[in-house]
Image (cartoon, rainbow, N blue to C red; front, side, top):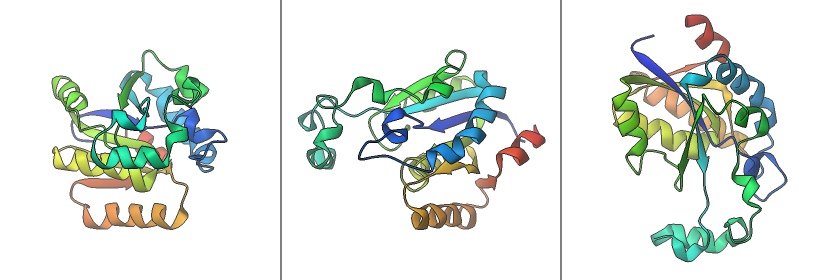
Length: 191
């Protein structure tokens, strides 16, 4: 593997694991693979958390419209504990780190990219959910920023099988120079 790497685990939170309108049933199936890489390398793991606003009015543009639809998922209505990581991953912090974001992509604020530049990171290994939303957005942003991206296909999940499969096909085919698909076992073996 070329360069220094970081494991960026996307939004493995209770809000998606538990019985909410945003429940992702697949999360349970990919958790063992994510726990494997995170547990072996917690110091190289950053967990993102998708943090909803307190109210729709706190957001701009179409995000306000989005949260008007999903008002029940704003923090004025939501149990604040649901924003937390699932317990098995939360136990790894620290040394694993948390990066909060309010958009699909963690790159929007510039804070994560700045941190990774300071650490000399060249490769971003992606796990988590959802493949066709936040993982896809994170992968495309990382590609645009010049990172080598590895998506662990057995460690990403979605609430929609068709778009999960289509997203992996898109990433593997169209971005094959900048992105590599692998299994967790293949990645760990290469280390």
